[in-house]
Image (cartoon, rainbow, N blue to C red; front, side, top):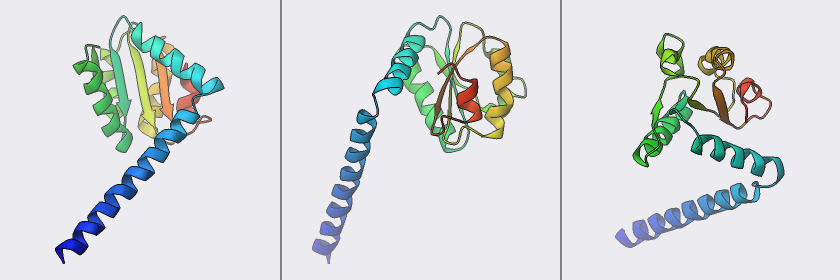
Length: 144
């Protein structure tokens, strides 16, 4: 029985790694043309940020956004996470014109993020979108 479980476990692990490797290859292959230009601009904006990197998202995107903010902070780039629902109730006041906002949303249409986008734009804060929908409200408000 242990041998059967062992083989099943190893097969699942190998299959998972194969799927993940294929996804990474697909992402690499997408770094052409406009996608390449957008990535380079986003990296430049984040690198040259004179303030802080403010990362936001809700749901699963919010979990990823928290991790991104923590990673930036731990590598020496001042960064913090702002929950979009809290942002619309005052936390957006922590964001300044010298900051860069990195907003994550798969659909690009979450109500909580959409509610704060006009404020970010009106204040002249740089907004970078990470979304699966290039035609979304989030993408339309973002610089890139």
